[in-house]
Structure formats: C-alpha cells, structure tokens
Image (cartoon, rainbow, N blue to C red; front, side, top):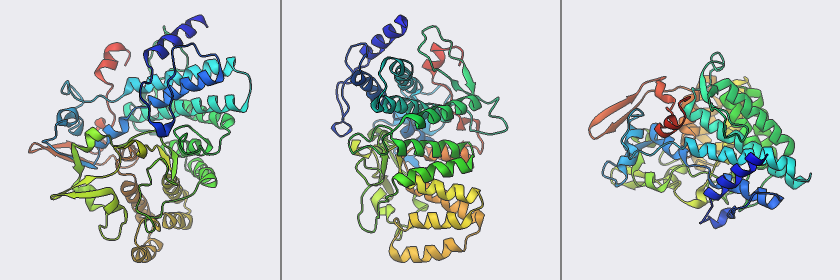
Length: 439
C-alpha cells in the first residue's frame, strides 16, 4: 500500500492541469495523496482530461482526407497519411499509446484505492463506476489501434496490448491476446453497470460517464465482437434514456457539439486544428454525399477552390465520443444482422429523416423500403461514413468490416494500403518499444 501511495503522489505531481476548458468544468488535481471523495474525483478528472486525440490521427489513415502538401505542419502528418509506420520522419506525430496508459493509471487508482478507502455512498459508486467505464474505453481504443482486428476464430492467439490492472512498479507489461483484452473490457463495463447511477450527465459535466454513455460504449464494443443481440440491447437501453436527434431541416447545427441534444459523452476531438489546416476532404468522401439533398453537406464542408475544407471538429465545444446518432445506426445494423430487416429499415429511416430535405426523404423512403439485406447493409455503412466523418469512427469501422484498399497520393506518388493489409494494425510507437522490450 505504501508503494502504491508513493506512486500516486509522484504521478499526480508530475501531471497537473494548468489550463482548462471552462465548459468541461475540469479542475486541477493538486499535489496530494488522495484521501477524500473530492480528491479522488480530482484524480479521475485528470484521467478524463488526459484522454488523447489519437482518433484525429486515425483519420489520416482512412479514405476521408487528402493532404495539403504546402501546409506548415505537413511533416507531422505525411508519414501517417502514407502508412509509413516503419522508420517515419522524426517529426511525425506519434499515436498516443503511453497517454492511454496514463489514463488507465488514473482509473486504476480509483478502482484499487478509492473503492477501498472511501465510505459507501452513491457518489462513491458513481466515481468507481466511471473509472471502470473509462478504463474499458481506453483498452477498447488501444486494442483497436495496436491489436489485430477482432476475429472470433483467431482472437485467442492474435496479439493485442499489455494489460495493466494493478499499480505495480515491477510489473512486466507483456501484450495479451485480443480475446483477453476484449474480455477485460466487457468485465469492466459489467462492473461499471453495477455502479454508475447517473442516467445522463448535465451539460458541462458530460465529459463524465453516465448510464447512457456506458450503454453507448457497450453497444460499440459488442458491435466490434459481433455479438449482435448484446449490441442491440445496449443501444436500446441507451435510447430509452436519450433518443433525441438534431433535425437539420429545422436547424443547421453540428450534432457533435457538447451542448447538442445528441451529446452523450463530450470527451474527444476527432479532428484537431493542426490536421484541419493540413488537409481537405478526399474526393471519395465528397462523392459519398448528395450535395443538394443531404443537409450535412453544406454544414460539414466549405468549398476551397476545387477542393473542400471540413468544418467539423477543431473546437473545444465539438468534443464528442458518443452521441445518439450512433445508437440509431448501430441499432439498424444489428437489427439487420439479426434478420430483423423491417426493424432495421424503420430505425434507419427514423434517423435519415433528420438528415435530408423533406423531398429527398420521400424518395429515400421508397428506396430503403425496397432494399434487400445486402443493399441495406451498404446503405447503413454509407450513412455511418457520412454521419461520423472525422469523428474517429471511420478507421475502426474499416477494420471491423471490409478492410478495403485505399490509395493516397502525395507529392505526385501513389501509396496503397492493400485490402486486409497488416498496416490496418498500427505498430507500437518507437519510444514505447524502446521502453518495453516485451512489445
């Protein structure tokens, strides 16, 4: 216990928040060994605050972007864009492997320490439940960055990421299998479900987990491991708490905003400003939209000569990890996987009614009603592409579905990510491999 407490104070003292986003109501942790509920809440708040912006970097690896080769920060991004993972330029941005484990450290403090030290109360349960949920989310992101895509027949042997559940300076961090990591994620979400008692966080505190945020995470996790009924059940539980959608026919506003009626968990920025200035929407992405009928097109994109800038992201008020749109599209997809094609059509139509002009929706309703299962699957995937552009969903969706071939052009040369390319799994960062030979 003494060693744990010393580690806590050293770690907390090393990372102190000095500037905060007012809308997230984040406060500094301070340089104390936590003892009270408020102090442990501050520890977990630091864990939330440190959650990295890795999903912004994943957009570079997808079919969403094309690079502005004359941008000031192009060197930071070009090797990610061309999938040059081995020996990249020394200025290349690094996927935040260590930052995600820093988040896990904070959650472990709560899970292993606060759960023992604090007196029982609903507030304690909520705090510890949030820690389990945040740890599950961090491991889900880690395994989908650095572990092989989930395959039920090989997950038991496919290499995943190290599992750190205790605070132990002598622990050897050896990668576990993809199956082990997913089992831990599900175990953590189950524990969180027992403890979290806030149905939905209020505006300004919605960077924290709630019941609806947890159900959103569970729905996403089960979608990736192809447990369709459990994913559908979680989506339905989430929608029972929060089902509002932004109707773009009534108001042209980003559904990603933290104060949007769709916001469930406002934690991550999927398209950071540095990348925003160094990239454009890819021609393939632009071609995915009906420019006159899809109300997202003029909201998401701004013409810049012959190309289009992406307007989403890059602002603190657009931090978004989960929102109700995802619950609808997951419900549609899983209903279809369970052969409930009528339910899938009803769900997807209730969603797109808020995204297209009234006239376009009349035609889409006819088209969707006539779709077979294969066509409806493609339509749902296309809606996910259109809806969640630069929100960090595309790379994970490509990994779990087609692992399609993608071609990027840079400085006159073509670079190809082949279908089922091993580079759909990102190699561990060089500094992580240097610090841990077990990787």
